[in-house]
Length: 116
Image (tube, rainbow, N blue to C red):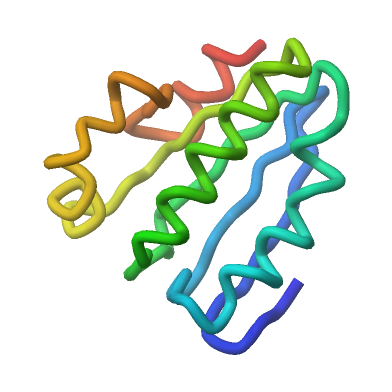
């Protein structure tokens, strides 16, 4: 699902949807990214991993959107996790202490094992 500055690739691994993000999640694409993710996050019992290995920038609206995805998935009795945060993303999100809210794993493999 290409957008200007952000590529989104979906992979199904068993009953888990892995969403690989490549590029920048900035204000120019955040609304389109939200529209593309809504069918995934609103499925009852959804299991979703956002693989952030190629995400080199995220705006504050993008962070809020991801927290909202987590809440939506959780209310639908699903599971939502992030993996492969780059050092830059860890630095940007550290003051927000997102690991208290979101499940964050160092690799895709550890995230998959946790969501199965």
